[in-house]
Image (cartoon, rainbow, N blue to C red):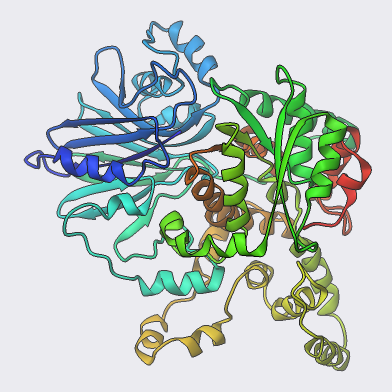
Amino acid sequence: MCGIAGYIGLSNDIVVDENIVRKMCGTLVHRGPDDEGVLVRGNIGLGMRRLSIIDLAGGGQPMGCETGDVQVVCNGEIYNFREIRERLEGKGHRWRTASDTECLVHLYEEYGVDCVHHINGMFAFCLWDSRTGTVLLARDRLGKKPLYYTVHDNRFIYGSELKALLQYPGIARELDPLALDLYLTYDYVPAPYCILKGFSKLEPGFRMIIRDGLIRREAYWNLSYEPKPGRVRKAELVDELHDRLGEAVRKRLVADVPLGMFLSGGLDSGIVAALARKHVSGTLKTFSIGFEDRSFDESAYARRVAEVLETDHRERTFRTQDLLDLVPGLPGVLDEPMADPSVLPTYLLSRFTKERVTVALAGDGGDELFAGYPTYQAHVLADYYNRLPRPLKWGIEVAVGALPVSHANLSFDFKAKQFLKGTSLPLEIRNFVWKGGFSAEERRQLYTSDLRWLLQAYDSFTPVQDLITVSDARNPLDRALYLDSKLYLQDDILVKVDRASMACSLEVRAPLLDYELVDWAARLPARFKMKGLTTKYLLKRLGDKLLPKQTVHRSKK
């Protein structure tokens, strides 16, 4: 795991300044406290900070092929690197290290820019081919690792975090009004937008190719919901899910440093822990945190799962003040604004876990794969609600408006009021109205007249509409799952986990987001994801075989 940064001159007469690249890397020490590597040749600048995970002695970057003609810096882990190595050694490629990163240069030698199709992992990398003058940048399919970029003064500048790019001399720091409007709509800034004007985030499943001063950006992968042909049976699917997720977990247990597991006491992390326990040598280390506010505290559930699985379990309870103390430092962790308060406990959990391990598995992704959010149930209820007579709906709205405010986690008044905000809207839009921050009218009241005029021609839900046009999801539930995967998961959940964990120099791996498992799950019939109002139907059937009943069927936190 690393942080990468650098820049490329878009004409051959530009000479990269090594001091600038090192200054950029200096902002990413938290992502890679173990080592620094910089390569500068003419108009090419590759830099990285390393958190050593695999091949501690020989895995330094930038890393080149046998001749040194292809060089790469990579942030992430390549989980199928052993299979790649075995296959490519049979084609004559020779390895110099035991690192997973080295497989990237050999894949590129063999397949060119299509090497991305052969990688199973979480990654953002920049690769340079000195023979053709080609630069390839790519980001993993689900967006677990970040990549920012901008073009300034005929230079392409890139980095794992926005703060690294801002080290380039003379670069402007101007707020993007459109990105601000998107932030207030979604509670985060969706890719490719960035809170600063002129900066962008490379979308997950995209690559960029720079050659002869020209930049080409293109998608190399997208989720498909086209159903699989043939008859499917629940029992067979549960067994297949067990095997596929078990293999994804096994691949993510490879590390040359201590490894553990986030354990929330919920279904997703519990299943991952149960499968991990079968593959680790020794006792699985698990970590959880608790809170004095009982409506938010899940530590008892985590403790119960740990007892059943017989893990080496550690937990720590935090006060409200512990979270408040983190708030002043959040801008330095996040760079861009994010209104997801769970970044605070995620940071505390990461910091606590880092005391004993360097790699942690987590249960992220289960909600977007198998329909775990209450909003999916709400879509079904909204269809019924919209058929009610208008006087009855008016009475419900009055009653809900009169409910007293509760500050408990996911309180009834909060859910009821959010539900009514979106019932009259199309499914794709209400999905984000329910999750998001300010309504269009609330945003209009916040803005100056100049800002309102500037934004008048733009629809803040354009990112949603753009995604729907390239999706093959036809079932309403699948459309909601697709949008949550391409927006909420990649630009909120995974950003939160990446920034909070890497601020503590902890690598977090998500087996449920193995792209082969994601491809398989997306194409399942919708009834196996949510049956009636039962969320995570298939995942719960697997959980029945592995976990205590109260863990599988308790309400979501």
